[in-house]
Image 1 (cartoon, rainbow, N blue to C red):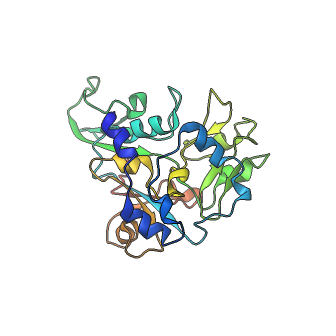
Image 2: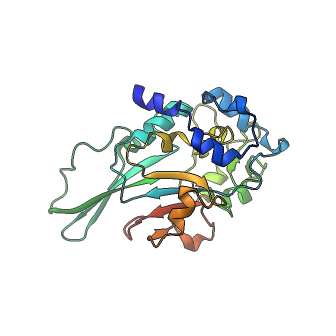
Image 3: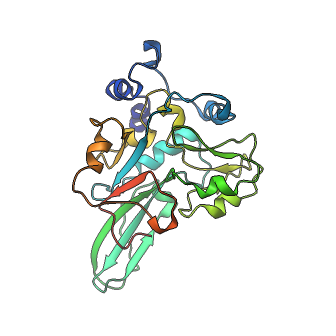
Length: 264
């Protein structure tokens, strides 16, 4: 966990130079990620502040073919936001397929502890196992924004879907409207909660915490308008790149490489 904490605090100068492109003074290049209380303050009332990334188009990529289910991303997220036990802003699902083509899906404790022990309740020989990280899809047409009766869930000019906890009344409409089940009612704040792609970090030129700590590079983040960025290159290569539940019409900005047909 100390290694993960160190990785979260690691300054990515190359990423900063590409993303900020001179829009932030050099004094901000060395920053320490905000604590949970500071994160809440930054996200609350964000409408009144002009985004520094108005012309940016960010994308998140998860490479299923690389993910090893170690849970480092989940641990980093929990540390960054003090996520209450039993709730997850991001989690990792394990998919097991036996030789009878039966599919078993589990995510014990959200994948926080990794997947060290094999399941012993599968009656047939296992043919294949793979892992699928889940997080907010940061939709271009978010249904959660449409149903919020008080405007607490909103979309920034740079495409991030966020929650103003000062406005949220905890009605749960957005939780029900999300087709990806990435929202939950925080038992401590009594407000809606979810992954933000570490918006407070991105605005400082840092990568999301989970991207920082992934030991195999299964998570990628960057600007689609930067043709030299890794996400741009991946999305323009002949990979099998797809999104979850495209028929819902939400137009996710979260893309998957090697997504299998068994994934729901």
